[in-house]
Length: 379
Ligand code: SAH
Ligand code: SF4
Image 1 (cartoon, rainbow, N blue to C red):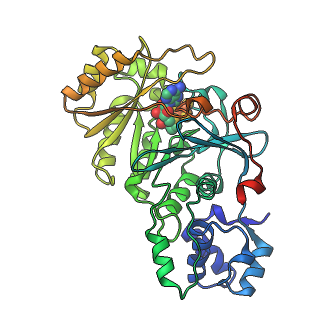
Image 2: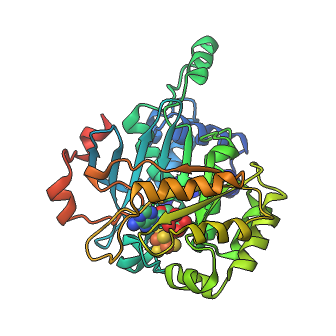
Image 3: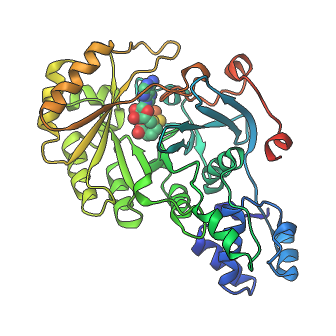
């Protein structure tokens, strides 16, 4: 099987090229073509030597997941459905806001962690996505949104600079789509390195966020190997309730999780952890829960992001009323914890948090407003 260049970060690409007897600067050149100019055809990589282009065509490819669907919600949120083989599909969502554009990426087909309120979890685990499939979501979104740079000839520096300074459409990436990123650590790590690499996507560490349900040893590894912004899905202030809602808590209970958060902050590009907290009516949303949370996190500099529960069929939970969410936020804020409530976006295309199920049939047929072919998307 040919090597997929999307699977290789800078070091991986340099090592592979060295095996072919090529110089390290070729790695930079290829990274630019694939990840900055969005080129997947070696023949169009004009400043790559002809001999190398022939070798590449023989042994490598830029293999992107196939695009199965593209839907835009009334509020501008856009969702792509990507084929990852064997009847599996994953979803990736772009959320435009006034001063930033956030892409929410999936890291696994399904998820093994089975949180009680999550539709991805209810699907069970299918498989880990490869680095190329993770990065491929960013690649497709950039292509669809016109967010790649034009190659520009080497002599035309002014044009290149103008291009480079142009505002990016995708300024932030969050690994908050389907799957648990830290349960697919190696592939996620290489994908993060590509996202941060100035020769590839060049995103700021502060603008790339990994969201985890709390896999403690992997939080420590991420801190040492590639610290980016960290969001932790908390959802309960004490172990008995969290054991029920987020079963991985039975393995890594709250005291261990809080200690890992403190260790993470020693190297984090941001000086706070974001705690995500899904608001479930009558389950975890009382004043007492809020007070307990304040005690739990008192040694962890943090912000809270309250997520109104997004229902899906047979979930068995209800969303907390807006007034309850507001009161809960007030209690946290009175304790000087910055608290925001996540706006529900893209509900009409099932693109809101926890609604990503990657279903190819059912939902796509019923709800996708426009399904485009690969050729159309590429044009
Ligand atoms: N596995 C990672 C990242 C993907 S889930 C994690 O759990 O953090 C991204 C966020 O969506 C998590 O905070 C998760 O708890 C939340 N979420 C899951 N199901 C949801 C639902 N039905 N409504 C609202 N948020 C949900
Ligand atoms: Fe997996 Fe995150 Fe869903 Fe839990 S909330 S089942 S960890 S995707």
